[in-house]
Length: 144
Image (tube, rainbow, N blue to C red; front, top):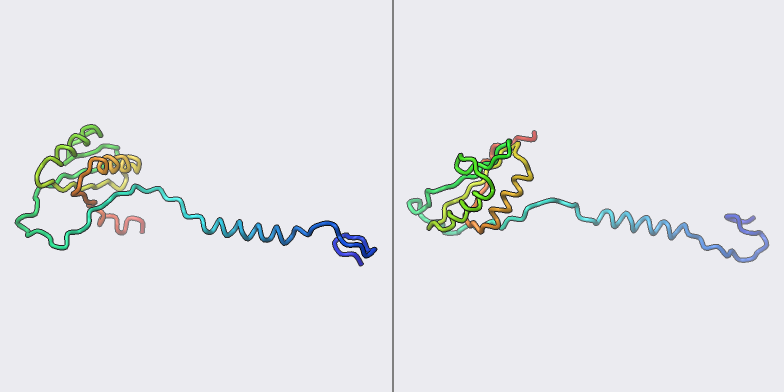
């Protein structure tokens, strides 16, 4: 009796069996899909390393500048609305102050992600060394 449509005269089959090759290709395809890293969109920020010997309380810089991003797309510098050009000028001016004031960044929960990314890029490009995210404790149970 002939198998897979071959002749029953005893002559060898001339067709190649491609089923094992297809199986190997499917396994390789699945392996490649599993090993591809998940694409994430992130803004890399080099945060400063913590100081193991913090200065005494009386020497800590009391000046702090705060950037708040509003849901309406405004950039607020210490409560005053500014544009991105003025933000660059303010950052350059604060770098000239000794000691450099701390810059606090607090985007609103409904603020634009695009605006947040652009402001963070401006901050990173300015070379500010004292930078921190504030207000994150408000969002601990935001998604629950």
